[in-house]
Each structure stands twice: as structure tokens, then as C-alpha cells.
Image (cartoon, rainbow, N blue to C red; front, side, top):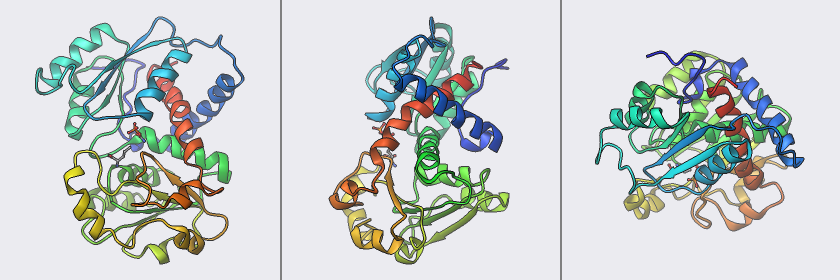
Length: 309
Ligand code: CP
Ligand code: NVA
């Protein structure tokens, strides 16, 4: 099934560097327009988006729904109890039915295969709003935030401290098409997916390091990045993980080792006092809220690209 002129947004490295940078430029443009109060740019007018959520969300839900509305469209929220994809109905049936009502589908799911199946059977673009494997919209917002604060992404050093999870996979995929230095400092046994790491290194674009030493890793960082130690679907492991992840909290001392130019970023939600201290979250170099805001702007540009607009 060909989606003429339409594109799914499932993994960062489904696109080349130029396309990703073009989407980010578009995000900046549309962000300025929206922030200026301009409300006459309505490219999504007459369009609807189905948003499937198998997991909870604040940012993804609100930023997609608000962004789509601000550009003229209408978004429908389908929560975990609504369509129960894969349980009440097979994913391939959901994909084909929603495609007949809606112009675009955004989904947050557990198994990555679910987003692949949705994309395979949908005849409209499918946007990945987080799976157990990756979170490409988040990393697009992060890239936009780094470009705004540091000046550029190329050549910067981003040090992620914590669990080698879905966020890390998206960072690795970004570093496989854009040259920057990405370091993941995680406890032994919590490294990112080995195949993804290997492929990203083999791409030979960004400099990629996986280490168990956060103190050494953060030296000279432009950005220190943190995420929860137990992701959605792993919450029953939270207590055990708190023990294993001792030494991987981003605190004032670690930020001092990173140096004065280092920004702090976190995809949120954050557990203050666990993976990050309250002091680091509230420090002047913490850019977690501009980062959260950029979810909306990055995604608007992603949706424009997906719809060929
Ligand atoms: N960062 C992020 O995706 O937040 P939500 O889980 O609240 O959508
Ligand atoms: N790694 C986290 C990200 C939340 C936005 C999770 O999957 O729960």
C-alpha cells in the first residue's frame, strides 16, 4: 500500500539529515507564527486526527491536540479504555477503520510492533507518540531545544544519565544521521538495545559512547539529560531500580562536574529526588519547560511533513 505524498513518522532515521533539519526549521517558523498570535495559518483546516493512547500522557496528548487545533484541525483522544487496540480489536482492523475517518493517526503504544502494524495497514500517515522502543517526537523537540539554546546540534555533547530506554534509542538513531557526540551513562545491565547501538555506531556519523561512569561522562557536556528509571510498563520494578541506579541521580554535584555551560534536560514526567534533584530541575540552566513546550512545535512540523503540506 503506497501512501502517495504521505509519510509515517516512526523512527528518526527513517529520514535523512536534511529532511530532519528541514522539519526542525519548519518547527521554528510555525512556532514564531503561533507565538506571535497569528491565527490565520490553518493548514489542517477540515482535517481530523485520531490519537490512540494505550499509556498515560500529559505532554503528548495536550501538545498534539492543541497543536493540531491551532493549525485548524480537530483531534480525537482515544484513551486506554476506548478502542483497546489488540484486545477488543486487531491492530490491522483499527488501522483501516480509522484511516476511513481520519487524515492522520498518532499512537502511543506498548509493543513497538503495534506501531509498525498500524503504519502498515493504515492508508493515512501514522505518527509514533512513544513505544517501549523509541520516542521520536520527543527527540525532535529536544533537538529543536538544543538548537535554540546551544546554537546548533552538530558538534554538541549530549550526555544522558540513567536507564538505556526508549529515549536513548531515539538519541542513538538521531546520532546515526546527525554528527554530534552522544553518551549514555547507565548501570551495567541497563544499556540500550545492543543492535540499535551497534548500528548507530556503524553508521559512522555521530560519536557514540555507552559507559557506566556518569561522573567521567558528563565532563564537557553541553547537555545533561535524564529520564525516569522505571518507564511506563515497568513501574513494578521501580523499587528495585532505585537501588540499582544509585549513583546515577543527576544532582548539583554531577552538574558541577559537567561544567558551567551545561544545560539540564528531561523529557518529563520527572520524579524529583529520584533520577534528578529538585535543585537541578529548578536551576537557571534547566531548560525542561522550553523543552516541553517544543513538543508542540516540533510535532506541528512533523505533522505538516507527514501530510505533505
Ligand atoms: N515526555 C512525554 O512524552 O510526556 P507524556 O508522557 O506526559 O506525554
Ligand atoms: N521513558 C519514559 C518516557 C516518558 C515520556 C517512559 O517510557 O515511560
